[in-house]
Length: 116
Image (cartoon, rainbow, N blue to C red; front, side, top):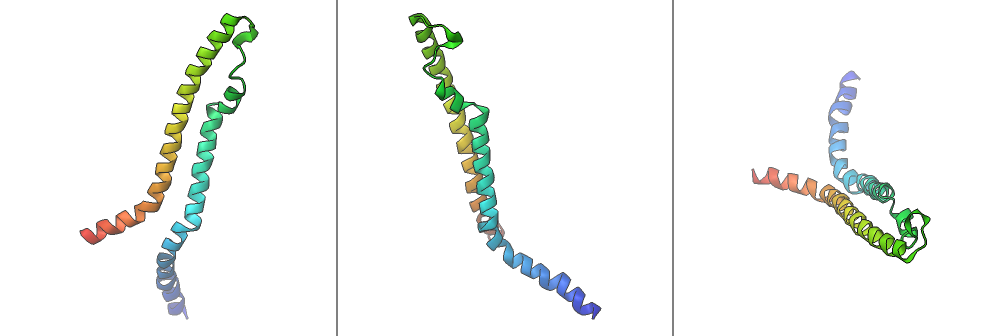
C-alpha cells in the first residue's frame, strides 16, 4: 500500500504537473499576468495623476485670471502633459513587453534546449 502511494505521489502527480504546466501557463497563468500588467498600467496612470491633470488642463494656475496667467498656465501644462504622456507610453510599453515575454519565454527555453 505504501509503495503505491509513494509511486502515485512522486511519479504520477509529478508527471501530471509537468504535463499540465503548459496548459496553465497559457490559460490561467496568462490571464493572471495580463491582469497584473493591466493593473500596473492603471497604477502608472494614477501615479502620474493624468486624469486630474487632464481635467484641469485649461484652468489657470493659482486661480489667477489674467491673460498672461492663461498663457503661462497653458505653456506649463502643455510641457507637463507631454512629459507625463511620454512617461506613460514608456510605462505601457514596458508592461506590454513583460506580457509578450510571458508568451514567448517557454518557447525560447525549449528552443534553446533543443539546440544544445
